[in-house]
Image (cartoon, rainbow, N blue to C red; front, side, top):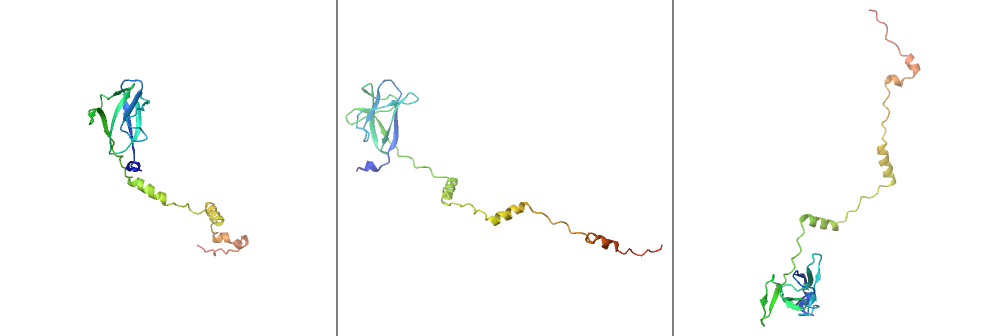
Length: 166
């Protein structure tokens, strides 16, 4: 097992929007891509040839395009000579960015996931009855006045005050 097996590979996309019918890229790529063996590039939705390879971060790769079986350089990308004097494009893959830190709100939400809150218990039958009766509260009838408390017979027996002559 090599050191590279433990590294996080970075998806790296190469594009070709120039001429040609059969478009490939070849370079000093890592397995499973054979070194300097052409890899087909397919047209995307924008009609641009592209391929995405998983490459090791902080490593330099040398590459060229193979267009209709001819090794060519993209005139829009800088190229550099190797120790043999062959010109190639060079790419050094940047390490992936660390994931963004969660905001305070996201942290709170994440913390709350761990704190499962149970719903309140269901009321018992007695409690339900008391709850239902709350809606049907009836006020007692008003207290009768002294006169209303008397029976009809008692009302006849009420002495009237004596007549006071004027």
